[in-house]
Amino acid sequence: MRKLSPDQLRGRLFDVLRRKHHWATPHFNGNKTPKQHLNIHYHQEYVVYIRDIAILLARILGKNPPWEVRRKLAAMIYEEETGCLTLGRPHRELFLEMMMGLGFDRAGFRDVELLSNSRAYREWLDTICQDEDWLVGGTVLTIFVGGTDRDPEDVLYPQPKKTSAEIEDTITKHPLHQYHGLSSSCMDYIRVHEMAEFGCRREVYEMITRHATEPDVQERILTRMDEALRHWSRYQDGIARACGLRNP
Image (cartoon, rainbow, N blue to C red; front, side):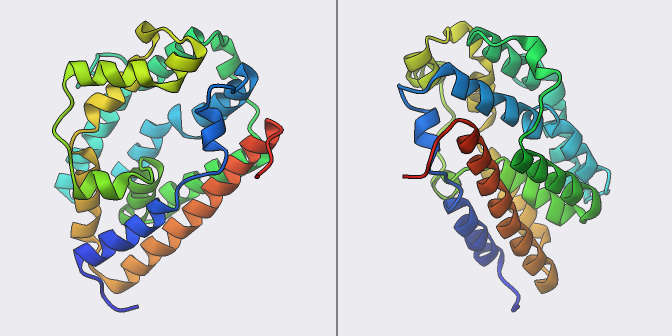
């Protein structure tokens, strides 16, 4: 593989993220989704990555990347674990508050039985974060797991930081509020992501592309990103099957 410039590598990463969409997503964001389907979906999401994202980030930090990367990762971990850069509460606690607002029992999130594809995806993430160097593991965790198919637009055409009024408008338009009656008072998990998102996506891409300069490292990153997409797609397929959904 020939050496890619930072912009070329970023473009290849964008190519992967553009494919990070799943046929069942409109169902889970729709107005006819049964609460039981949301229950299955959110229990899997919580255990696969929401609950332990700070632990996975800490594994990358423990590989002693350059200081500016350590500082960025440390800030991410600090916010996930404390919320002190935004609303002052750990993100996983805000997520569980949102789940209770939907009527789900908090105790049900303590011992979740993962679906087979969910378990395979989480085990793969554990292996990548534990065994790969910080550049590969950090790319998978911060760019793939933390990203969406909107990344190219968000990074290339960043919008101004949202005002409080704009964030509240996002809350009122959220499917959980519109279709499932979730009180806006239970949606701080959505708020913190809206608050923390400004500039974040551009920063993580710069963090990776600035340091991934060797062709063999770039190739390994792109290979792992393709693997991440395959594992994530199967993970989403498993949730859809558990809900009785079929690909149209």
